[in-house]
Image 1 (cartoon, rainbow, N blue to C red):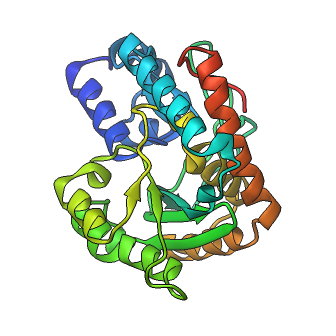
Image 2 (cartoon, one colour):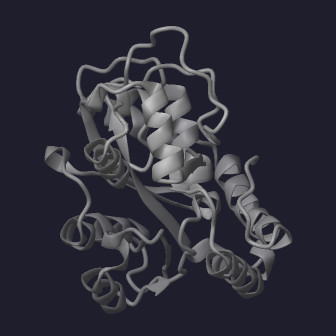
Length: 283
């Protein structure tokens, strides 16, 4: 059997590197069957996909409470999304962009794999050629898309010396003292001492984010699935070309769609409270 400690550790490592990794990619990397992958993901690692991101199957009582508490605090602080301060929020996250993403009939927004049958036809796998990008936006639109050069992964050094300075520079182009409220998830590069010190030095307020909550992160429930769906099935000569296409598609998102995304965000907070912190599968 392929369900051995080495493969379990390897799948865990793949998920840690890329929270959006797919069955096809795990299969291509490790040469193990979909049945074995299913067993490792659901019986050994106990994860599932929400908003196309791998998260724990079952939230603890404390994690559910953290989600509810954060949602209540945000709804109160920002007057359920009606406060003018919402326009000061910039939300961002990172994702891999691949030179080729196969087309899929499944919705990329929500994946739950417990009942998934074995694939019955061979589908060309996702390209292993990839580049990481960070994308930030606010209620009125796109702020900045920052690619990582040399196809590296995110760390605090890059985040505080290249990524965030570019984002803040864009926002403060016309007003150097403009107030900024940053929203990002709890990735290590976002929560490190180096990043915290940088944000304090920039006089930037942090919005916070509850752990394991892609359904409450605008990049995860809206932007990345939306753009990647458009790009599926297209072949690019390099990851850099794919990133350029990604950037262009982001610029095509209409002002009304950005606005609707933020309205949806605050509606999701209320939905999370109504469900006592449980995940909600549908948008």
